[in-house]
Length: 333
Image (tube, rainbow, N blue to C red; front, side):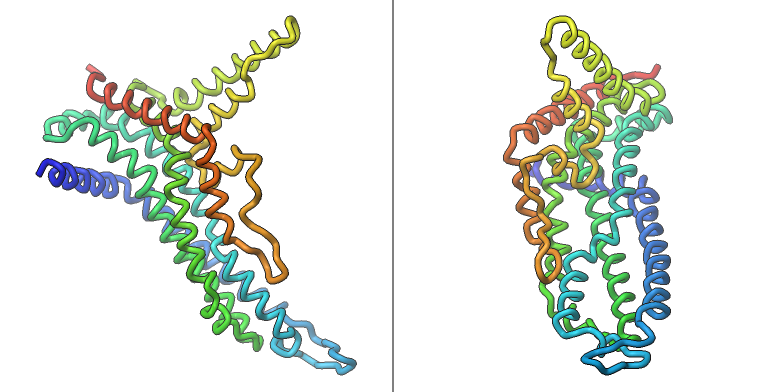
């Protein structure tokens, strides 16, 4: 009974977070995705229709005037083009994931700070909702809801661009629709992207925990506190490290300190785990038929085998607990 009540409360809190931040979490990526489709779609269409074919092509000694692409390209090349398109078409939505980083960063930074600043915290505290549930709902919104919305919009925008490109190519005699629809990568690529969400949660947790902690106690200018404290601490450690190295030859863990700061501030960047695992081979392998993206998911999950990922999780959980306590006792007077 209590479990069902908590589930209903969490559902209500998540809805509240979405509706209060619908502009940044939904409308912003939707508008950017629409602009991306229009601009890139027009560019691709104009480029293919105006410059997609040569005026004269010689095949086996025979010159073809104003040749169509289906006459110029061999069947193997057409299949390779379709393979590359289905394997990499989601790359067109990269700007939406860049926007996701900014959305999550500033959402977490203002999630608890804005409640105290506008005094709405007095209203929310009057409701039968615990501080842990409130903070957890904000963390789930940042690490799951916002990325999931961006993922859906990114897939929709990428499919729209792929359709526009194929439609433009069909005007030149190259029909790739059949090859694209028959390719498994067209359907597996969005699923692979969705499968990375748990990895994103693990690597984003330290950043989300830190930002919510700062948001819970900063009286003013939370951005300066959130960025300034780790950066200043890193500069001090590096300065002490350089001094020790010059005088005694000993060093502190300056490199590890840099990784900690990067996890605290950059964990919400999609794909950040590849930069922390240098021993990981790339998940994108060139092949004779394009680029094989099938290893991207397995390589991403391999990043969870290292202790660094779970140390970050422990830090993130500890900072979320700190945010809960600060929300409970913080009083702006």
